[in-house]
Image 1 (cartoon, rainbow, N blue to C red):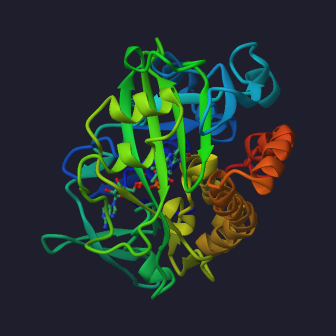
Image 2 (cartoon, rainbow, N blue to C red):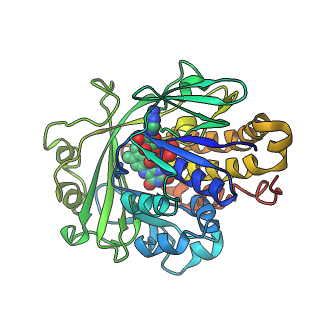
Length: 400
Ligand SMILES: Cc1cc2nc3c(=O)[nH]c(=O)nc-3n(C[C@H](O)[C@H](O)[C@H](O)COP(=O)(O)OP(=O)(O)OC[C@H]3O[C@@H](n4cnc5c(N)ncnc54)[C@H](O)[C@@H]3O)c2cc1C
């Protein structure tokens, strides 16, 4: 592709796309509204499908050094410490051997530090908020806060769940609140003395709620948790997280197993995060503007895939933007192929994440028992999500 790429958003998708394009000699500018790169939320679980492209960029050793590989993936019921399932992940090296990359729990600040640290000086423009993008036919014009203007050959909206660039591509579309919300926390492992298998990634499932947690840090010294509740029915007072009365989280998990109660009360209660999903967009690109990551397919976090799908998007789009097809057919050919390759995959993961939300919150009874029995078939689930090589059909494309 001729010309430069403007990426809007220095999140997980934006930074990884910037690195992939830069590695192939494409001039890139990343516009980030924040004046400093701060952690958004606490931690993130990166699976083999998302880490594989980062390994190909030479970043795996650095990530591995600051992350924890969970020993197992375990499901438990809400009342007791009994296991329902347990799948080996890092304990015997089988996950890494099978999928060609690890499964890592990492603090978001560390992840962002590794990605941003690999970008050359000047590539990321902090405090650069994009207000709108205008397609001029032969290039795009980005209108920035402060009446500044920037130009590029194409613009990539990597601007997250409440994406502004989405309005250029699919006007009127937007994320929908799912009627579920989450609390997040980072807890020293020593403060959860009852916790069985503290180095595992674990789901505790119960009526109208679940708790997911995994260890982070090289010594697995802290545990990142996401506690999800049904409700409130409506989300009012702004799209972002909100403070709610102290004790809300502790009360919701009051009758749960000791380890769960210890974990959710070990740190001050976080704000309550609304959880969103994005109804499928009719298109992911229009003219010279294209979307990746949450801007294109915001999903519930219950498969731990929002960030990983953003990494897949970035890797595929970078391949296509530097392929000869993009030189001869222009950006339109690259964008069309990108959408063809990515829409069905992300839709399937998104839909499965929604279904999983209900399954994780079943009351005790026959349905919960059937779910527990089905969890024995988790292996194929891991394979269809974690085993996919997003670049399978694009990696070998020549660079145009
Ligand atoms: C509670 C919770 C837990 C999660 N856990 C996991 C997990 O374990 N694994 C996983 O894979 N995913 C997880 N996710 C999902 C994951 O966080 C997102 O899918 C991922 O961050 C999306 O990456 P992105 O690059 O598309 O957007 P983001 O990472 O949100 O980045 C968007 C960036 O764009 C910037 N921006 C926005 N608007 C503008 C503008 N107008 N101009 C300039 N900059 C702008 C923002 O400041 C931000 O830096 C979780 C999500 C939630 C809510």
